[in-house]
Length: 205
Image (cartoon, rainbow, N blue to C red; front, side):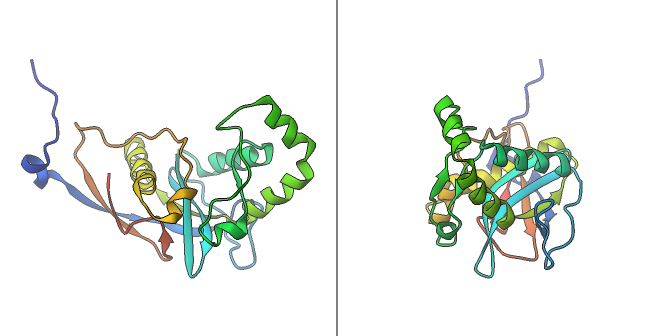
């Protein structure tokens, strides 16, 4: 009976390949385009990054994967407006501080939270709109499903293990599918026009 391959870093290091991952952007969210960034997000299969402007570049909040960026990002916008996701104080974000105005019920679906959100929707909606208009999106086209998952996991795990203050902004509830030990590692070199705090120049997936 054949045994399943298990990667051994010392024995199999020559099997590790290098790939360049090109990120397009920044884009604004749909219907939040500006005169400065008027180009709409392309509808592709790949990995996307939600970022905030920060100094001369950007600050990573989260990565995601999708078969259609158009459909997936539209879902994100609906969830924000419905109260499903965390809403931050944007002034605090500019100081690399995590300060929540609203804790979305995607993490804790408590009925009292929904009532609170509904009763104070005018207040929360202003914060939601400010956050949605602040977002800048970067996209890398990646056709292979497993490769998308591995890239997403590597990006988010880099935030989870970092001791830097910016890492606190990353959501901790994500379900990630990183590299399995029967898969050969791939060294990813990120090619991007703008610096993103939280996106390393190289990642192993």
